[in-house]
Amino acid sequence: MGFFKRNKKSDESRQISSHGELAAVWSQGEEMIGMLAEAHMSWGLGSADRWGLDQRTGVITWTFPGRTATAAAQLLGSYNADAGTWLWAWGNQSILPEMSRDSAVVRDWLLAQGYSGLAEPMIDADDQMAAMLAAIAVRVTAAPGFYRGTGSAAIPFITFGPVTLTAEDGTSSTFQIDFEVESAAE
Image (cartoon, rainbow, N blue to C red):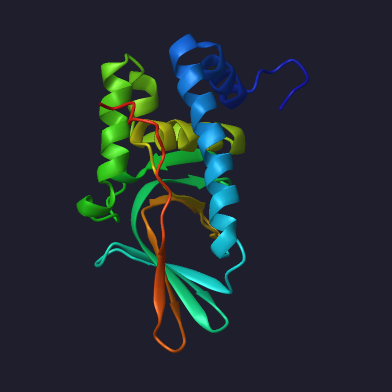
C-alpha cells in the first residue's frame, strides 16, 4: 500500500463505527462477546485440546483431557486473511442450510436496516472488519455462545447454545447463559 493510498477495508470499518444504530449494535455485540468469553471460560472455552464441528448433526465439540463439551451450533461466516474476505455462511455453498440460519437472520436484518453492502455473500474484510461483522451478528441473534475457531485458510465464526459437559465416567452437566437482551432481529 502506498503512502497516500487509503485502505478500503479500514474505511469500511470506520463507516460502521460512524453509523449510529449500526455502531450501537456493533458495540453491544462486542460487549456481549466479552461477557460470553468470560462466562464460558469457566468450563474451559479457549483451552480445549481440539475442537470440531459436525454439519450433519449441527454440534460443536471441544475435547479436553477426561471430558468433552458439546453444543448445538450455527456458522456465522468465515474470515480469510490471505484473500482479505469475509464470507457469510448463508452464501457459502459448502455450508448446509440448517447450519447457516443465524447468518441468514443477520443478512435479513442488515437488508431491513438498509445496510445492503454488508449483506453481500462475500465482503472485503481485514481482521477488524471480520470482528465487527461477528459482533453485529452476535448482537442481532442474541447468541448465548460465541467461538472464533482456528483454521489455516479460513477462520470460522460460530455461535452456540447451552453446553453439555460430559466426563469420562459418563456423568454430565449443562452450562447455559441467559441474557436479558432481545434479538435485534425481532
